[in-house]
Amino acid sequence: MSTSSDVTRSDVPEPPFIQLLDAIDAMPGAAELRAHTYDLLRLLPGQSVADVGCGTGRAVAELADRGARPIGVDIDAQMLAVARRRWPSRDFATGGAEQLPIPAGSVAGYRADKVLHLVDDPIRALAEAQRVLASRGRIVLTGQDWDGIMIDSVDPGLTRTIVHARADTIAHPRAARQSHVWLLDAGFRDVTTDVLTAVLTDTRMLPLVTGLADAACDAGAVTRDRADVWTAEHTRRAQTGRLFVAVPIFVTAATRP
Image (cartoon, rainbow, N blue to C red):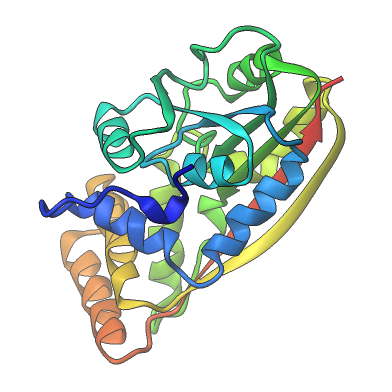
């Protein structure tokens, strides 16, 4: 059996956004967070699990290493191409969270990491999760709170404007904090939520920060000049080891009746 360390390598450099995702996956604490979500699924050996919004497939490989039978589902063709190249022995399928290519009641676990804030209708996505889960199956949702991102800056007022403006460009920026109530409303049982904090100081995380300013500028919340000044500050911070970003991450789990 291949393991997650057996990823198929390529001499062709990955696109920048894939490199950024890889850097996030390799951050201190990231592997432990993923392992925590796997533990919350409470899977027995051989049980099936859907990893929805699987991206490049790392969680699918790690779940398989644990003895589960995972299927990775993603709507992004480029993500799936990378996943299939890296983990050729694993199962991947094209589909969105609101309409999964999975039979009803066929999986014992459902995992979605940083997904619900992007979908058009999170409530419909949770109804779809309920459809594919078997009775007493487990659901685990993980996501960052876009309205709650904390960034150290010499201009906290401008920072608040940029963070909230970026959040307003996202379909459901507070989905992570809302998931607890959504699952209760959908009829799930034993709903629990943990809140963890990711502290980002690595220079490789700078594009995440500067991307906030670009989005706020594009939305008309700040001028290009103010965005450039803010970006220059955090570029200097990153270059001198002083970048500091704290992101609240919610992990919500529940059981299907």
